[in-house]
Length: 70
Picture (cartoon, helix red, strand yellow):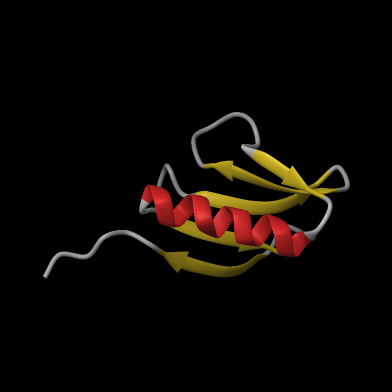
């Protein structure tokens, strides 16, 4: 994935979303489902990719919300 993509990951007992290239999480949640939904929404608005990691850090899913040209 590329810089600007959104990563949903587990750290310090919380699920977090961070934009790749940023230094801090953009939001946190105790619930994985809430964090994934929030991360997806951010990625869609920014037209970037969304990478969801498992609690152990392994990549679970990757989705691409970039605009496609006809």
